[in-house]
Image 1 (cartoon, rainbow, N blue to C red):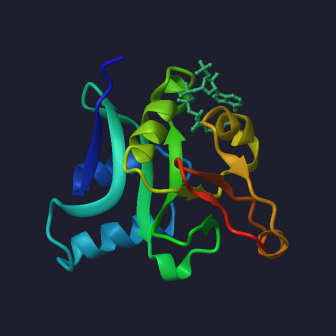
Image 2 (cartoon, rainbow, N blue to C red):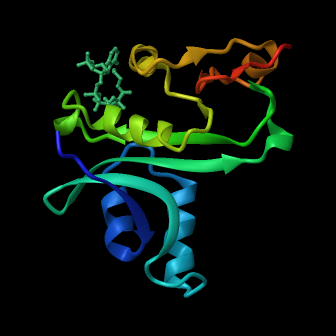
Length: 157
Ligand code: COA
């Protein structure tokens, strides 16, 4: 499809684009504050990746690597990626952007965990993620989906 995934830099343009996403929250506000207060440099690294249509940001996700010592999901325990804030702007949904971002994340070759919004579970199943229904997760109000690369298995609980 020729869609390019870009690592997003922290700058005023990106933070302005973030305001169009529903999951705009504390993380984005503190990035903006840090930038305004010169606590971080313009164009510094962010955990976000995105897809542009022209010069408009239409889809994004955040990826964060979690250290093996905190791994409760995979066997053998290992570093994995936490994927969150995957979101495609309404006019651009259903055109493959969500899939392009998820496949980009899979290409790191690490297991992936995400805690999606309720209504998108059909999408995650399509992306070959499995729902892990551990009691401790439910107790925290989470409903995680995970992806196992070849050779990686679920951790037993
Ligand atoms: N349930 C089941 N399958 C879904 C789905 C859903 N909610 N959303 C997408 N799919 C399927 C598509 O049909 C497509 O299948 P195909 O490969 O056979 O054509 C595949 O998943 C990839 O879809 P894609 O076009 O990449 O999805 P997207 O770009 O719209 O991204 C979301 C998916 C959920 C990330 C995006 O729609 C979004 O941000 N939505 C916000 C609101 C929300 O969560 N909506 C969920 C539905 S109410």
